[in-house]
Length: 40
Length: 538
Image 1 (cartoon, helix red, strand yellow):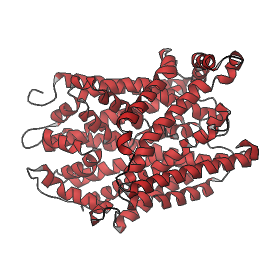
Image 2 (cartoon, one colour):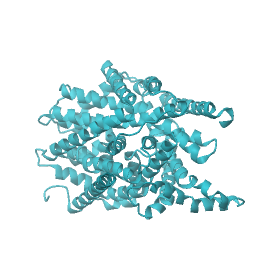
Image 3 (cartoon, one colour):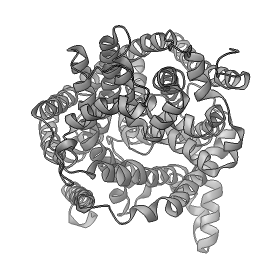
Image 4 (cartoon, one colour):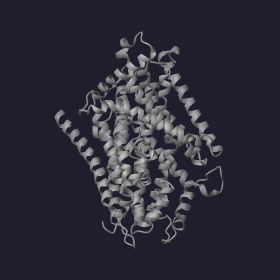
């Protein structure tokens, strides 16, 4: 990353934002699948 | 006789349809420009805060209102507000939940047709191809001319666009396709399209992200520069209230709150369905498309290709320039660029069509539920209205921006506030009526503010598949409505004064159209209620 624009703060902000979005997706779809299974 | 209402076939189909409604051109064009313009990575702080304090609660409000209406045989805010408020004026406020999406779709379908034209021309390799020059304005000129040619802006007239025949034909094709999907119905039309288009949107976006991440410029720029431009935080931006409002606005538009479309979609839920988890799941899919995919394609490619100053210039000209000029200009100079251009615009087209069908459905639900009009006939009425009305943005310069400001930006925040008030504070009033009797007005208001949200909370948690943290009770009851009021006050102060006098006559024509649609809506509501309950009801 040395020669490029993305700095450590930028990488952290990106990683945290992506992480929140991914966790939200995984959580909600896991819950949906779990409930579907439970209802069957 | 009450007609039999349709239902969603599967839960995943419903979530994809609601996410498809939210995922539109804004996810791939508006978000990266907003983020880059407003502090880069630091923008994500107000963005995520707005998502929690405004986005999620208001999504739940629309879902819950929709389920409430669906259980009683109604799919629009017209009847839902009437049922909850029990006041003659409520249904006339509720009609905004039908008219806002209807007016937005008048111009949205036209923009959607441009993406189809661009996609088609890329497939035929019929887009400009010029060698890269050092001056970005010179380089972008053929692409600017190309766009002006498509929309008919290069005729020299100040008042009219003169689009070529192919633009008109593509618009007719897009409108017909939309109407056909609506004609097929909720499960066989909208849900089927969502199940097909949504995975395709993600596949195409991932292919484009991979292509962008493997691009390098002759002077060594790569995706790390693009991501740096978007994500490196400028913490000083956090002191600027404009940045916070830009983030709140972006959350508002990206989740399609205040259009009434989510409410209508939720009205087709099966009995005893959850809304809490469904709301979170559809919002999450939208955020994936926006933050991860939308943030990685257009701006990143632009920085690699045009550098920082070039991208700043493009971004300052608006999200539209980024998508319809800068991106084709990039594709023109990379191997297999025509293919990637085709993919990019097809992606935008699919993102557009899953939104436009959602915007058409409230009007369909209104005609079907309140007039008992069969779907085939309702589509015919809707088609005639959209075909005739679309000529305003197609031919009149400035009309599209005028409609977008008053209806697609301003009215939907007001309507979202009404939705929040209806759900949070008015829904519970019948249950606390005995506590209100004989009290002075101020006490009544205080009791409603304190006790009524409890019933909204119960309604939201009914059949919920997740336990919503209690903190959201307070966010939903007080913080989200206050946040909305704050946005409105800010707009009244900063934006409205400059918009009161339109730039030319077409602005007045667009406003007259909005007024006409409103009068038509009020008339139809009056007629529907008279038909159902007799003359005294209106």
